[in-house]
Image (cartoon, rainbow, N blue to C red):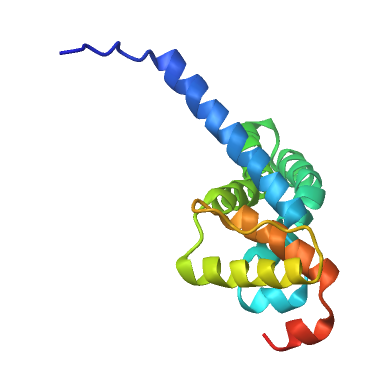
Length: 162
């Protein structure tokens, strides 16, 4: 029987940090790939999450500084821990959006979406667009790539039928 080596706490923390960084990077990529088209907002929450995350990335650092400094201004240095906590809360909001998007990007597609995306990619290939069909382990990021190609290639009448 093989004995496994005990995993050190330092290795566990570095592995967790790497996974978090990979999820954030994947979320950023998914956010840039997702087609920002209003018609998709009826079927997928990504439209709203991407818009909220973009807004949070733009304004939350400023709001964090304003919220923390106003606490310090009004109540003095005695509330420094609370001011830091409020600032960190505001800074965590865009990260939460990126983490959700990163998780969603790597989440496997349900069969109904898998079939729909494959039929969409077949339609794109019939029009001469270079688009590969989804593989067995397709995820939401793969669907976003196909949707982006479809919105660039197909006319509005196709999307109005949805």
